[in-house]
Length: 243
Image (cartoon, rainbow, N blue to C red; front, side, top):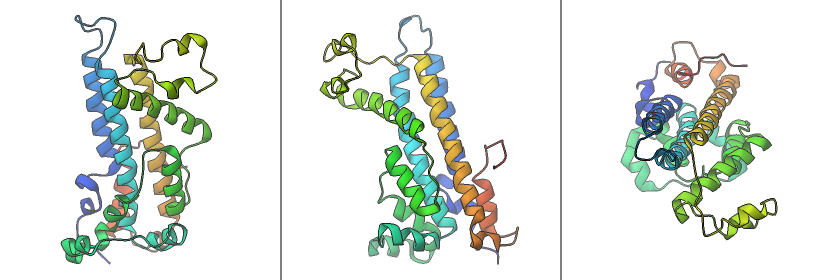
């Protein structure tokens, strides 16, 4: 049965989550590269820490958008999700505002209720929704380190804090930096951070789409169904095949 709306209605900003993230990824990368080896700041790239903050925000939004799109396309996913998380609550005013479009917007409503800021919360949400766990233990550690740098920049102007020295693995040389020196995020550091987040976005996209395609409801649909097309659009920008 053909859906009565276009596939872009399933997505935030009318574009698939990965493509939206990729657009922001490239725009921030351009800003960082533009200020690399700037004649006024030859030793520092002041765009790198700011771009790190921005890219992490866009990555969090990507995870939220991917979660929402999955539910928008297949609202039935909420049934199994609610058995693990409890019945989600949606305000009547929200339902009334969307009137007859609740089904294709259900994911938007639910995604706003959950925290996508840490690897633990992201893993938990996608595990409960689609039985996939995006972050490995090593990837979680890398992500936590990036978040730590981001939080120093946002809340402490980059200066090392007491929380930093509580890590017993920190050397005496590093301890001497607390309250006296600020974190430096070089162009190369940003390159590593952005590559990691881009790879994680691709991984989350591949895992979630693969899980959706294994869903019995998906397998009963015709190739012409809008939901099938929407799922395929989620893979736009992912150039390798699913495992």
